[in-house]
Image 1 (cartoon, rainbow, N blue to C red):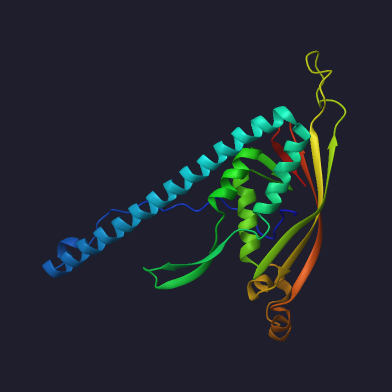
Image 2: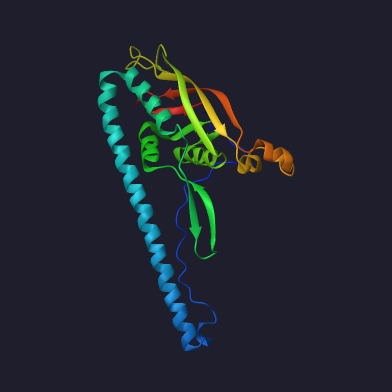
Length: 248
C-alpha cells in the first residue's frame, strides 16, 4: 500500500513531561484549598508515572519482538535469501492486513473521549527488525513515520482490509556498487506485490481525505459506510544485509 497521506507523518506519541511547578497563588490558598491541591497533584503525578511505565513496557515488548525477528531472519537468510525476503513481505502484509488498532481514549482532565490509532508492539517490533531505520517510502524517511502513516490511514476509515494477490521476486544481476571483493556476488532483491485494499468510508474519511466535500452533508451521508476497493502495487527494495531500504 502506498504510504502517502494528505498530512505529513508524525512521531509516536509520548507522555508529556510532568509539570511540578506550584501555582502562583499557593500561598494565598486556605488550608482546605491547599489540601485539595496537593491531593490532586499526587493523583496527577501517579497517573503520569503509570503512563511512563506503560510506555516503557511497550518499548521493551517491541524491542523483544524485534530481536526475535532479527534472529529468525539471520538463520533464514543463510539458507535461502530469496525465501527470506518473500517471507518478510508476506508477514508485513499479514501484520498490517487491517491497519493499526483503533481504540477509544478518555482524557479525565478535560472530560473528553477520542479515537486513537496505535500500532501494536508486534507491528512496531517487526518493522524495526526488517527495515532500515531511515527506510524511504514516498518522500518520507523512517520506520516511525511509516507507522504513523498506517495509524492515520486506519483512523481515517471505519475499516480497512489489505490482501496480497501476487508476489514476484527480482534479484539484480550485480551489486549496486562493484568492488573487487563483491564483483562475483549477486545483487540486492526487489520484491513486488499486487494487492487489494478495501476500505469503508466514515465521516472522518470525508473530513480528512476528501476535504472538498466537507459542507455537503447530503453527499457526506451517502458516502458514509461506502466500501471501495483500490488495486495496489508495491515494490520492496532489500539491501545487501537483507533489510528493506525502500518501499514504493
